[in-house]
Length: 386
Picture 1 (tube, rainbow, N blue to C red):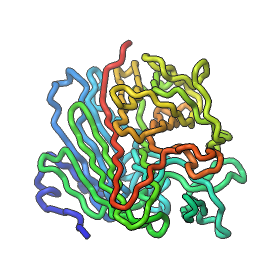
Picture 2 (picture 1 turned 30 degrees about the vertical axis):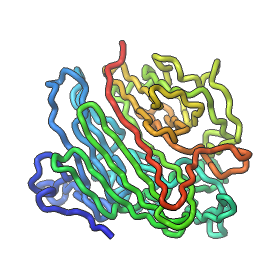
Picture 3 (picture 1 turned 30 degrees about the horizontal axis):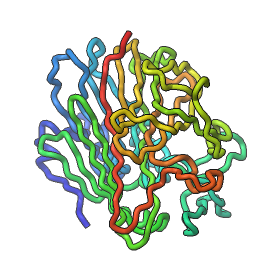
């Protein structure tokens, strides 16, 4: 098994790679590690003199499934902004320290990567309430019961994969400090999945883009299902959510039982003529309501699923481009009156093994031994029309 590269030169000498440093006073020390692995910040120098939007940094937690915790960018007329809604490193470390399942990684901040499934999976709850049991092609899966809605008696279920607390087994940072590649030898995910899986996660920082790539390879001896996604909390720099516009190129809305459980009913409806139609080229105002909605029937532009988030008051636009043909759903989550939204480009529908789908392809890719699948999403900046 490969070991984590901890080159002294990378940790102390590289001007283009920033690890979180200890503060001058011990009482105010900023953590340099989370879950036993260094906090890594990729950096690049600004080159446009503030004339055009450009990305500047990306902070990653190899000790927490390569969570892409923060991205910074320079926006003309606005200066340096945080692309993701994330508190201080100190607050993040405190929140994650007692987080058994890694739920804080997707429920509160940053951008958690999700594998071998995104979204919710329901099943039979164990007597101790700790796991649920479900089946894929007759083969049993026992998954953590790590989530439930807030309403009294809400059903416990499993959500957002099995790498939220996982450390990278190995990582390599490029000599210029603008990209990182990590490997997670997940095996059977601690006995909770089938076969054996190797994950490769790569994050690349450029002036005009931040690319995230996840390659999942079945290195075991039997077929396995695979779903991959991402849960980024995108900040609204102006803080004025009521003027934010969103474009999701989706012709269908996935119906759910309510916005607390958010369990799919198996019904898929057309968005045309409804409040769930975000297909207009200029997008649609999102207002200040609660959203937790899944969209399908994705319309691709040059093979890409292009979601646009526009904050005209901040002269800020963010484009989320799904580059993988296996991406079949976009989840849009926005709590009421909060200055952030989550936009999740995912392989699979919610509860993908459920009987409610009546045999429909729910986006879980079947990997035979030796096969792999690649999920890739690119972020780009633009200046929206005023």
